Length: 124
Image (cartoon, rainbow, N blue to C red; front, side, top):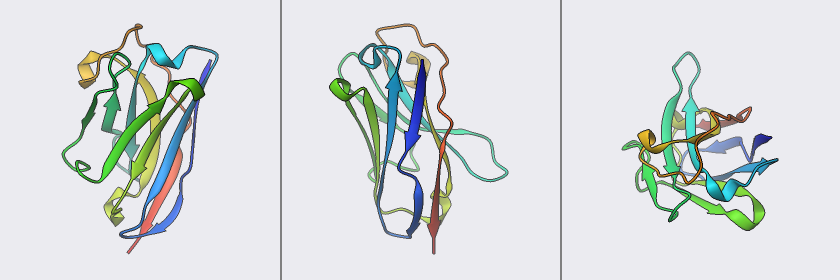
């Protein structure tokens, strides 16, 4: 049972990246998934989440209009499309199973499962 993030890297300001969160060992379709970022020396913060029930999404104000979360349950993968990246978006990005307290509904009870993170670096 695990979540594995991928897709991070170095990008110039204004550029785009798409992160993936691949699930294995459990039925991703039943779980809401959240994305979180942790900048160097900072606490982990929510980026947004996607519900399992209807695929609805919720975003932090700092990324609204720039980031989009989607899911492909057939591929057991959730995506984070990041556009118009800014240097302040530099962080390690994690995905996790989340509950309704994050603003997204989950069919199954969250397991508190986290991925290992993927580093995104945005240069100015």
